[in-house]
Length: 260
Image 1 (cartoon, one colour):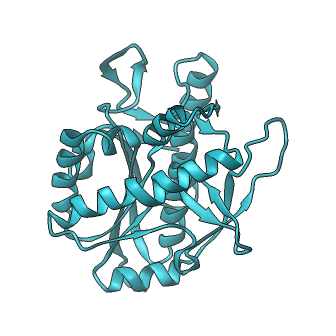
Image 2 (image 1 turned 135 degrees about the vertical axis):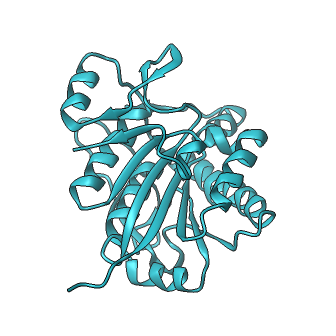
């Protein structure tokens, strides 16, 4: 009989929380209540877009994913691995969370490859090919909370911009070998909205069949698409639970539950 796996919480937050002091404080308060092993993944797209605009650089998106030119790569590296990551780390330390800021390049934790050009050229976007789950497990054994930004590398000296939702999902799948993994995507809404123009009603559950139809009908658009795509991928690869919603989902059965 296999030994019972210990729980691991993997939480992903977006730039809309990072860039708002009150939302960030509320999130960290909830996150600090998790006493079991945990990993945090963050984006920072809003901050990167704001800096790009100040620098006179055009921001291009396709289905919620950033088109990463050479110039945009420099911007996202500065924001994700720099300002956003360290701002988050310092706020976590203030709540006695022993956090360690990381990119995929650190300790060769997340290896990726530059996305091949098909219909769309995503530039220096990275698709994950390997997660070093053994090293991450070692960090968790030290009672550290790894905090990953949305930067990976190709092990040939090239940094790559990788969707933070994808990083969270890939980490969840890789770590499910050792842990019973709960994956939660935290953003400003209470869950996946039934109407993008109103935050009053959310889907309590979404399955893969719903997803296909809702996307076709235009109900689901932009940034929610990669979240759900990665959520289904994680569930198919034996991740225990996936939810999408506000900070309340961290310690409660709220938000939108994603099901196969």
